[in-house]
Image 1 (spheres, rainbow, N blue to C red):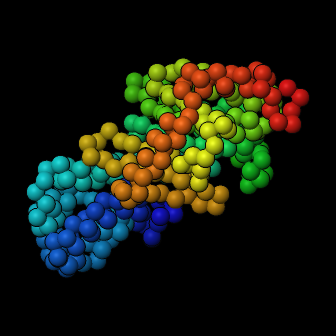
Image 2: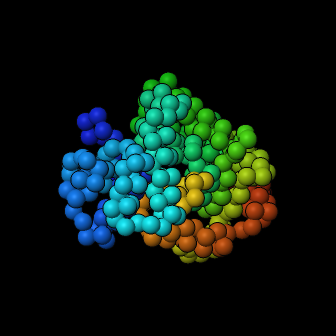
Image 3: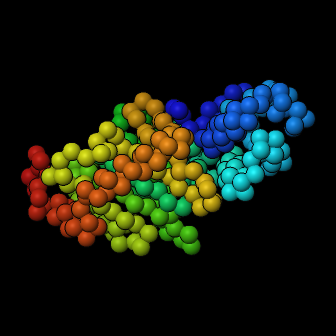
Length: 301
């Protein structure tokens, strides 16, 4: 589904709410019940049930428990999973995270909100250094080359958003990140040789953190499972919480909310990681390119 968060009047549909609503819809269908019958169990209207199943409203725990009882769901793990997702969704809806006050966060705001409560991110990148590892100069060069922002102040705000995200990499509960990067991203001269040299040095510094796992997929690997495009797989601490896949295309953002499809992305990521260099050999390649031992195409290094 395109767009992580969409609005209808004063209601908001979020990724997690749509996931939860879809699961409740599946359980209702399996039980052979109608929306009016579900509404009767909640002393509500069928319209409310429809909004819930579409993710337009936050979920109350008593409503979830009542519906689970009506649908004959007695597996405690299933019920707990639904309650966990509802709790996380409510927290994200009312969160006053710093990204809420950044007008230039744009479509990235929903992803940042999710990243802020995540425990692990697996990211596959074809042409860019992952945003969590970008230097200010690299991020600035990307914003300038994008052509969308012309005001220097807007560009600096975009850079600030990208840099501030990186606070999740340190602290008491740092985000676990496994990044697999195609070699092309290391050789693309974003901002010029000096900017790239500093960026690759920073990437090596990040790779030294215990919660960061960096691998490079070399050109010589040939064809690979993730050749279709870049994506991020976001995981959460809650037991039974479903991974969410974020795919950022040129014109839109796509969220993969289906459990089976999400698992397929995880399989593709793992296969690509197995084709990639080990973390040690990846660092050697990054260092070699950064020091000019393997010159960038078209550069004088």
